[in-house]
Length: 178
Image 1 (cartoon, helix red, strand yellow):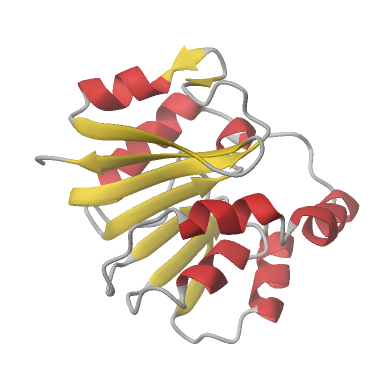
Image 2 (cartoon, one colour):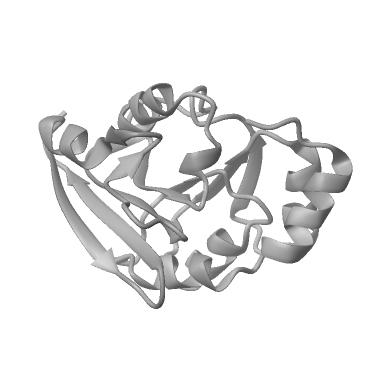
């Protein structure tokens, strides 16, 4: 993770907080109505606010920067959306506590992708849905040079790639078993 200053965070929040790729990925999520959701690298919370219209479950956003979460809190009126400081590699959540885990435009920013994947597996309930997506990825199967879709398949996920508008993509992976 780069050395994010308050100025960098404010710039990112203003320029990318409501990026169209966030809403394209959210639109691709097959919600059933009452899923509990964790969004890793939630930024300004735009994905969670969009998800609040599609599920009645608990919505939790995690970001490593309190200043970014201040932006998210200021923009969010929905009471059931909570924001917590944390990283992909050290999520502030219990085992098997979410039906849906999302990482939208955040995986390339993780310090340790392996630790992040281990954590999302830990917090995702059996049968839960993982959604990774965003914009500008020419090869979504590769993150930091690693074939993570193969790893998800090996970990018991049923993986599907969903092409969205432009250079935006989403990968949905349903977890089977424990």
